[in-house]
Image (tube, rainbow, N blue to C red; front, side):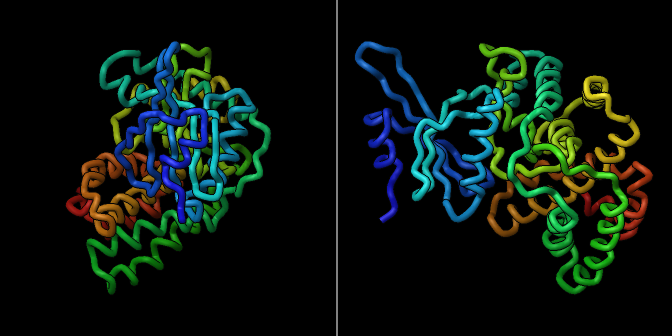
Length: 326
């Protein structure tokens, strides 16, 4: 019989703690905060992550978390684990995500984003993790979510089948000609909801990292896209430009090459997100993600202005009207 959260907690230093289950998101992971009040000490808390061991990269989460912590970054420390039943007891970073901090004007937007950029610069020093690398197959599998869910929903199966082959060939040509690197750790969901603000720490350790279990080895521009083309919040264009310049100055990367990779990966990621949000609405009944679609389309349309994406831009202009993009 599968173990319950209560049974797992009873075997840890948080035995007897109050368990407060938290609202879920788009994944099958479930979270709870456990709080233990001692007789002579202040209350202490931790987070429980309850993940099906058959999916969602449970073992990858453990591996990446331990690698990031050992390299000196603020991923949650693992306090206890039950690998068989998919339970982890994690360090509690609190509730101050970048999203919450920005909504309450607690810390300047510039300071938060500069620190996040500095972290992306710094963690190029992370020793290579034995993770799968992005390759053509992975990129194409992700962009296929766009025809398989969005185009299918708006056009129906027959027309979607005709359009899919054209769309996938365009993407194959783009990706094979793009000069993308597969040489550093890529978080893949490096955005305001997954970044926690830890002002009591120093330097880049002030950025607490969550939801990195899908991380791969890939191109550094991918996480920049995640941060600056956030599906859930508007990042002012002038701030995004300033952050890209900061990154280029600190890394010494060639600007033209970086912007080419940034826009190709931006278009790739935003196409994928449109497919995912459609899937969440159609298959899972999670309609709330549709509110973000106009913003994601805007990101995609900006990315498509890069000359390397002209064939995709022309194809979308021909087949997906402005009305459908709304």
